[in-house]
Image (cartoon, rainbow, N blue to C red; front, side):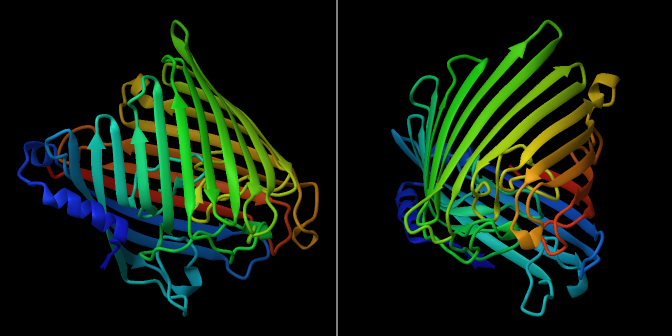
Length: 424
């Protein structure tokens, strides 16, 4: 097991432990949970492909132990996260799910683990965290939780709600630990379909964010990330909730504006991504429609290993962020609690992208892609298995790219069984 302490974490840990750990808040407000996650992942590639299947099965455990804060005007505390992944089934000819790390021969590790420490300090409504960061939610670098174990960052994170109606956020991060790894790495850019130079690295990503909620109906957001010597993104978001007598409407508009930064080691970045999404809910029914436009000379940039909160968020096969792409979305969710079956939900979703421009060798211009997605989930509501969660997802992805493109036609199935128990 690897202990990912770092210098600035050690500083705050020392400050925290120098205060008596017997202080009432430090102990009485402590929390601990253990999540057991069983994950089966299968890809069936279509058409011309050197690999027909990617299929693996693994068991994960996520232990979170958070202290409260010591007494006094400035409170100190410590969070701990322990991650363990265990191989249940894999082979070199079926690798490629990102559930497990691999050696140079393509063999999956029997197990992998990580221990992360986060020192924290609180003054009024301002919280500083240093070390392993697990709760950052930046829309242009959302930590991936789509595999067996969560992706984490290493750095310093500050959040404050001292100003009425405002949330202020800032982070300085120097490393990323990806979802199928126990090693902290420098930052690189997500580069499917040859979008950018995937070997260019950065030692630092700085984030700033402001959220303003003047009332329950409106939220306005601005975020910025600068990944040194790679790229910078400004994010603008407007969200509105309107309640009718028996239904409600959520409207959301976002704009990501990105340019290369410093030495631009990964290549030119010139992109603006615009999207609008509307969700109408009545009873147990939710209907969502969305549209997204990419303009500029390049694809939407993001940090490799993270996810973007764009129209393609939470899809299984593609990010729908290729140069010049236009994407529309339709989604329907039904919560069976409205029919007397609490805990059961179903989702069907469809995304279609067109006008895609790729390098000539990958298909050239006027390309399309689409993904059909279905999900069924159930959380047991009572009895000895209460809170055990089952989730089955399936997607069918198709495109007219060249056969050597990063995204290939595929059918994908994922099955999860999660159980979280509160230890104290």
